[in-house]
Amino acid sequence: MIAATSIASLVFAAISIAAASALAYLVATDNRRSRPVDGAAQFRRHLNALSDDSREHLREQIRIAREQRQVR
Amino acid sequence: MARDLAIDLGTANTLVYKQGEGIIMNEPTVIAKNRRTNEVLATGHEAWDMIGRTPSYIVAVRPLRGGAITDFETTEQMIRLLLKRAGVSHFARPKVLICVPSAITEVERRAVTEATRRAGAADAQLLEQPMAAAIGADLPIEEPVGNMVVDIGGGTTETAVISLGGIVTLRAERVGGFTMDEAIQGWVRKEHGLAIGERTAEEIKIQIGSALPSPADRDAEVKGRDLVTGLPKTVVLTAAEIREALDEVVTRMIDSVKECLAVTPPELAQDLLTRGIYLVGGGALLRGLSERLQLETKVPVMMSSQPLEAVVLGAGHCIENYQALRGMFMDARR
Image 1 (tube, one colour):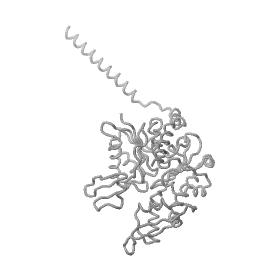
Image 2 (cartoon, rainbow over the protein chains, first blue to last red):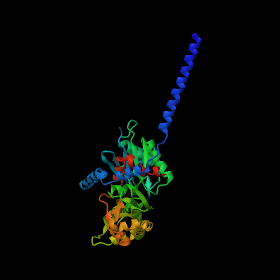
Image 3 (cartoon, each protein chain N blue to C red):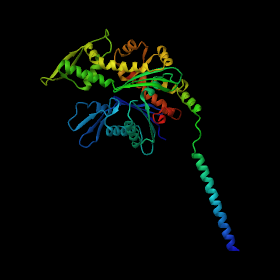
Image 4 (tube, chains in turn purple, brown):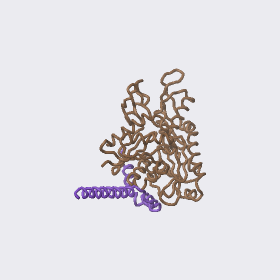
């Protein structure tokens, strides 16, 4: 009786480990699978990063470079 | 956390931009090494002062010539030193964006990225100089209109038409500021029997070099070595003869721009008539060059407000917007 219970526990433990491993594998492969690239959104982001508004920092750097040149 | 870097690895000068800070380095692309031990003795301004004046065991070289890497080992040593000076270490590994001539070969491309990664960069990406120059010149390249930029560097002249954030047409010619210096050296040797060094030739170009006659034309006194007697000698050069010496080089540069215009789609070509051509790079500072280009192409020509820093400032903007603009990098388009 005790032996039968131990064997059943071992079987259940093995099944649980196999199920957990399979679940972990599925989650990992799903994360690794590349998401479909939204080309339009990416293109929009690209243009936005070059837009007039996004260039404030660049203009500041141009001003600094000009001042440094005048000092030299 | 390491701050990302943008490097304009030019034939003549190297500039480094640090994310959030701006330009942190601007110096000649020269390295002085001990021939016997291969040890680096100096870089930048210090090495520049040594050119043509070193004892036999020291060599001061430019590792890039004509927009091409002529000495891979030295280039790698230089990138390593640049990154070290910019604060890159085992614990602070930034992403590095390097601006290179568009005519760079596959071998050179790999050599630069590998050298940068080996020098401690977490990631190394390359960007064509004309694209960086257009951003740095503050051109509205995100709009659906033609923007033309001509980058005349030390070793190359690169012309690009850019619209909607991408290069439409591109032409690169291996002529630049150093080709002008070589032409002056050759002229003085042939016409005056005088040997002069590359630094002297550059000084002549800056003092009296031009692409068109001007009322400000003047003469310059030049010292060198007489090729017949071997003794030091002084000659006087006129602006007209230096213009003649430079004519072939200037013509090649202008022809390269015309070739780019010839393959530009008509819709964008007509934009250029109203928006004009923007000049960047040290070679563009030659007196009368913008006027001559305008005369020959019939397109208005403007000089960028910061011709020497435009490339690195444009690359700096890409570093500040790394994720959004990484589609522009050379590897991303392959």
